[in-house]
Image 1 (cartoon, rainbow, N blue to C red):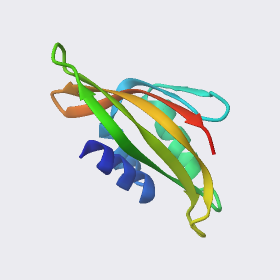
Image 2: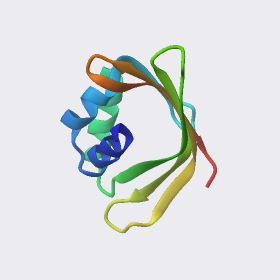
Image 3: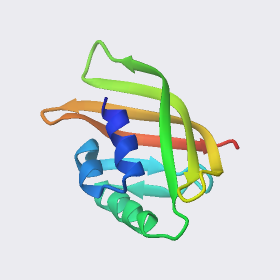
Length: 119
């Protein structure tokens, strides 16, 4: 459900909905250039810039598997992602991703994501 909320927030360009889904010290490794966004603040700034661009992209992450650790409150999500141009729906890029989630007192938050561009 938290992934669905993140996808909705991206589609609706809703920074306030993204914020509680990210750990303060989260890390994102981008799919094409392997740029590293370190920390919630850096990621929110990047999304803010993306949301105001003409012809912006909407990214959707679709889990294939989610494995919850029986030992500690963490989970690994593996799946597919794609980005479309908001105005036209044309496919911009796609690939695979992995995300590490941690359950906290405010719910599950993303600690790390890595994306690989394959198409």
